[in-house]
Length: 310
Image: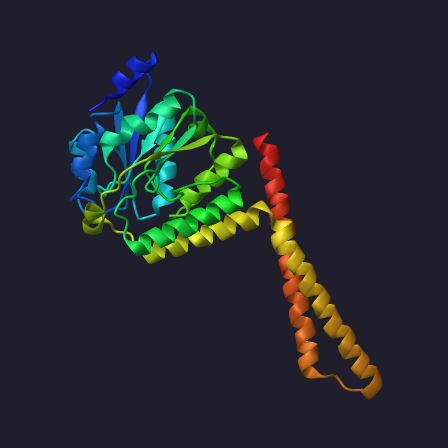
């Protein structure tokens, strides 16, 4: 068992304040073990109780964790944002996120933290597919790999596992990431945001305890996947609104105008309006105008956000 003190000593590094951040929702059966194990490898354990209806918060608090509570279930991303705020308030140098359902092994924390302490990466993502693969159920493996490929294609960065919640954030990431996702798409949003901020991302092999996950997890795998896919679509559209919305909007507008010209031509020749053609013209024009307006608005918001960031 390697402690962080031993890692620091071996690397000749000064003391860093390292925080373990645990998003938790109805995990009273597993939270005690996660908190107690994590305390062996970090300076502070913080738990965000995301509107649990059981004794998750009470158990974590009695075991010495700092607990922040959401009055109602806001989602994984909202819990991560709260944990970021707490870590920054504690002036943490490093924050490690791991799930409260027992799927991640806190004993792997020193290995994940090492690249950040060595200034080799700003963010470290645990990967279930580096080295020897975990015993990931087939439906989960397919979903994870699909989302990972989509994330890599859009962010132009090759990942082996874009969905693992076992991660490490260094000081630059803690103070530079701007997250807004409330749901499970937060994991993908983090990687998109890291790319935009110029942060370096590394992957380290981790084990995932799926027997524990199946017993304690409150997440529906298919709902999880759908939520993440919707987040990817939103992030892509926000990144390039003029191309992904503006161009289709122009096409719809041109098609609508073509139907309108056709309708006017028929009216000039036969003195009658063809209702179907008129409705098609109006429909395409309205859709085109709405899509174009949305694209321009998103582009303006994006530009303003970039100016404010600078």
